Structure formats: C-alpha cells, structure tokens
Image (tube, rainbow, N blue to C red; front, side, top):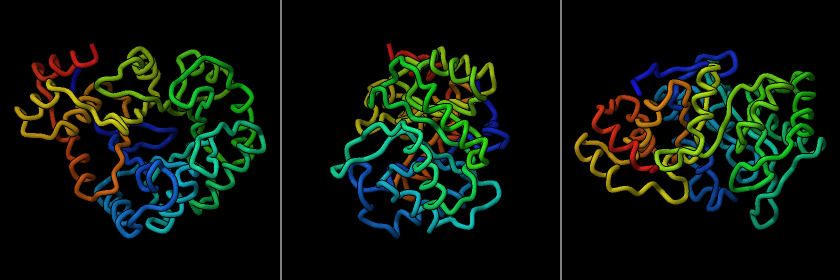
Length: 286
C-alpha cells in the first residue's frame, strides 16, 4: 500500500478523492429536517470552499431534505462540482426503507432528484440494491438497471453507478452499460470487498465506501487508537487516511453536520501512514 494521487476520474470528470456525504444533514434516522438548517447549509458551503468537488446525496434522505438543502446552499453550482445521487429506495411515513425498483418509481425518483437539486441532468445516479436493506445479496438487477439506461438515453442521466451490490452484480451490470462507480460498505474493520476494490482499481473505476468511519456505530479499536496517538491524529483521521492509502480508486464521502468535524475529516488527506502503522491497522479486520 502506498500513497496515491488525491484525485481520481469519476465518469468523465477529474475530482478530489475527498468528497462529502450529505446523509447526516437530514434529521435522526435520515428522516425529517435537521435541528439546525443554517448549520447544515454552512457545512455544505464550507465543504465546497475547502476543495470538495463531489457531494453524495439522495432524494430519499429526508426524504427530499438533503437535496433541497444542497440547492439552497450551493445553487447555481460551481462547474467543477459533481453531485452523485442514488435511487432504488423510498421511505414510508415512519421513515422505514422500502424498495422502489419499478420503472415508474425509478423515473419519479430521477425527476424528484432533478427538481430538488435544481438540475437539468444528473451527473451520476447509483442504483441502490434493496434486495436486502442491510447488505449485498445475489439477485438480478437487470430490470431496474434497464429502466435507468432508458433514462440515460433520454438525457436525464450522464453516468450510472451501483450501490450495495456483489461482484457478480457489478459484472452483470457492466454487460449492459458502463458502470461509473460502486458504493458499498467498506472500512478498516469491514473488508469483505477487498477483491472487488482491487478489481475495480484495475479498471479505473472508483470504489466509494459508505460508512467509512463505521456508520451509526463508529469504529472502535485499541490498535486504531494507538496508531492515532503516535501520529498525533484522531482515530477517525487515521481510518480515512488508511482508506486513501488502501487503493488509488477509493473515493471518500465522510459525512458530518459540523464544520469542525468537516475540517478534521478533510485533514486526513495530508496524513501519511508509515509502514509500521499500516501493519497494525491491517490486522484490525482479522
């Protein structure tokens, strides 16, 4: 593992590998509005001002809340800002996560993303597999993927990606259309996608870890804490730096509703992990 360039190609854009995930801008459980909308807008504006060129979002965050906040904070968008969204899910009245895979549901999701973001075309749309809400499971995604391909042919989508998928589903999708990126659960302690990360790297396709810091249960490890102490960094900065050094195609989207935490996260790009630290960190998943 070595230190790599801090930019990568997503679709036909060159972007910073330190992006921003907007999920935490919604209320508890990614449902309803945030407690402090002004703070959420401040975080978005500070992210872009600090060099973030990719924001990950979805219209089912809230629902609609994060996209509306992004529009309020950043529209009209900078030419170099890439907004990536996802479809395939809807929320019930209590905030539950339900599949939304029909042609009509996917078309409506794309339309609502366009409307709430204030865009004429979506740069990247990830199809989020809902065959299992919590983890990738095998099964055909051909029907919803073909629906997105039609929307791409209509000029509403530039690039298609995948989320919460298996390596087989990635290969099957690539037989139908180019895949711009893959977004799966992956972090220092959850490395079930190691082979997929490497396979995509060989093809020049970004791999975007969601929950790079553990998600709703933050990463906890004595080894991580010890490495962070020796490097005068926070454990979360070390976890992000490890991902950046893991493979040149890893594109990070840590989320936060705090400007202070945003700057802490972005500082991870300047943290270089020495060989002895990598040995300790690579042992965590085992």
